[in-house]
Amino acid sequence: MIGQVRNWYGGLTGRERGLVSIAAGLALAVVLVFGIVLPLGRAHDAAHVRHRQAVETSSRLLAQLAALEAPASRRATLAGPVAQIIAASADNAGFVLQSNQPRGADSTAIVVPTARPSAALAWLDTLAGQGIVLENLTVTPAADGSVAVNASLRRAAP
Image 1 (cartoon, rainbow, N blue to C red):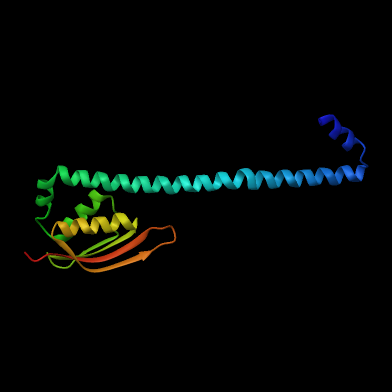
Image 2 (cartoon, rainbow, N blue to C red):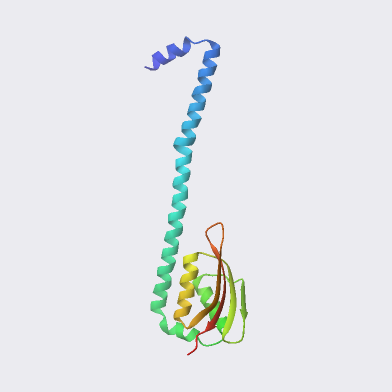
């Protein structure tokens, strides 16, 4: 079969050979891009999404395990100003506070510049379980899927 193709190609004029070569090159480029490069790129992007979801799930599970293992230390951290409690809790949860402005001993305003939405809301829910409640919450989405969190928190009345 290859011999037949060679004979056919050899029987073409110079101009026809050039056009057939260009057409073959274009066909090869289309197959390469649409058959190999784009599917691999989509698979790579899907792998990143699966990895991010796995990391979030793992961090939630690890935080829940840590909460089960150390209930006494959690109660001990509730003593003191709310701003210090929030700073320690954010550090333990892996959040970077851009701003933590105390408003007396029982209230504070915080800004978390970037966080995963599910992790940020889970952290705020954990704080509510520790007796620190939200007064005000603003969640601003970013283009990369993360959010910025602005919140006012206070110690719940006993």
